[in-house]
Length: 169
Ligand SMILES: Cc1cc2nc3c(=O)[nH]c(=O)nc-3n(C[C@H](O)[C@H](O)[C@H](O)COP(=O)(O)O)c2cc1C
Image (cartoon, rainbow, N blue to C red; front, side, top):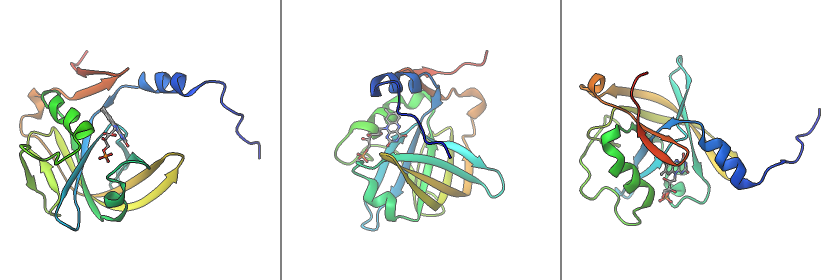
């Protein structure tokens, strides 16, 4: 079988090309065995399978929360609304307790579900794949829900390093 040719671009050109792909924004939340609540902003979320219901997302190997996500069985994917840009930034940057002042409730699995999320998926992790500098997590969805006012809400969208509130064409 033929092997991959070496890239003809540098990392910044790769990032710039990738960033043209518009994504939604999620916060992935979990509770460590110690009881500590953990959350990270992630745009790498996507659907995988309807039956069984599977989703995926990826986390940088060097991420401080990797030890918890590597060992925890459950997490929640919270899909952010355009009004939750502050949460997106908070869960991407704050070094201390990212849940301070953030309203949330425990889902059926005991993992935190963020109030105001456009949708949420409570997952049991099914598999992990180490690829390059990230780990891909595949989660089996045990429960999911949609905000009761979702029809009147805009999703938070990330593209080319900027945030948008997506309006239908
Ligand atoms: C819009 C946006 C999307 C992001 N998506 C991801 C992602 O999919 N995977 C990832 O590992 N980091 C992603 N990040 C970066 C993490 O949120 C950030 O590095 C965070 O601080 C990691 O937390 P930790 O080091 O405490 O684990 C994203 C950041 C932003 C602002």
